Amino acid sequence: MKKVAIAALTVGLAVAAWNAPALAAALTPKIFYNSDVEGPSNVYMMNTDGTQKENLSQSSLRGRYFGSVSPDGTEVVMFGQTDDLDHDGGLDYALFIKKIGNPEPPQMIANDDARDKFEPRFFPTDGSKIAFIKHDLDGSKDVYVLDRNTGEQKELFDPDTVKN
Figure 1 (cartoon, rainbow, N blue to C red):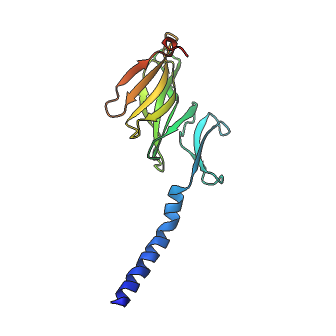
Figure 2 (cartoon, rainbow, N blue to C red):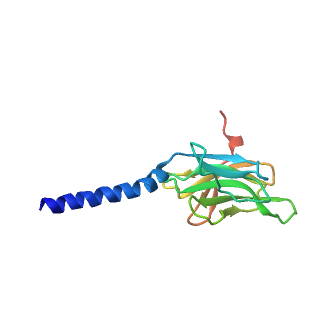
């Protein structure tokens, strides 16, 4: 019976040692930043020691900017210009989600006639909604919430009506 216990312990240690590099990589703290060194502004992620730099936004024509990381650390929300022009021939702005570790380009999740959408933040703790500031065509800047399940955007309040 002791031989079986020792074998089980040995197998357990071998599995733990084999998984250690993958676990360490997943738990390595990351730095998220914007850079326009390679062309338009893009969102990048890298380890804190400068290794494993990755372009998350993958935009070759227009600028994209970092918003926030999901509560579970698996996604990044970003904002910026799309690669298309809007119906008036001006720049088109949207929100994008990128699954960390997935090679697919970011998915556009909110696009409408607003001039800009910026400062997106995941909330609440489950990341089911995203709050952001929307700069409407009339010049107003309002705080909105996007429900990720329904795609519905709801205005929370107009910052101009809040004092202090």
